[in-house]
Amino acid sequence: MPDLGKKVPKLQGVTGDGSTLKLDSLKGQWVVVYFYPKDSTPGCTNEAKDFRDLYPKFKKRHAEIIGVSRDSVKSHANFASKQELPFPLVSDPDETWCSAFDVIHEKVLYGKRHMGVVRSTFLIDPDGKLAAEWRGVKVPGHAQAVLDAIPAR
Image (cartoon, rainbow, N blue to C red):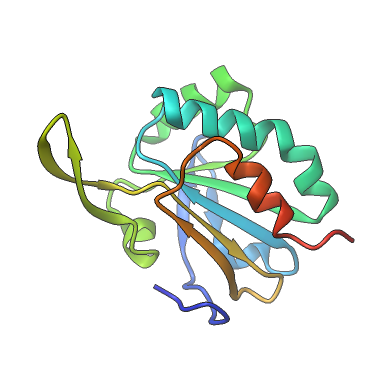
């Protein structure tokens, strides 16, 4: 996991439309990488819709958004289509991205412990360095807080 001010790892992954996204190909703009547990669940749907609704404002600040979960490419395609998401969702079944950003931790659901994705967001500056991070995210107001962290041009 990169520390604040340090370069983020060179990662690539397949998105819901089947294309390969290379993180370092987005240099020169702000990049929001948000990790979420599962497509089409209530909290994850609300988070995706919040980023979707603010997407034009992110674009005005020269920022791209990438959602990442361990779901399949097909699941991402269905989720993105149903929610009309204008940004890519990276499928990370082998947990390469999750491990690079250290977002898989023990969670408790209905009294049972399991390893899962902790909802987290990372802001990468135009030079490819980690500018901010949010861990253990609560969805309401989060997308706006991320937008507010990006300087207006």
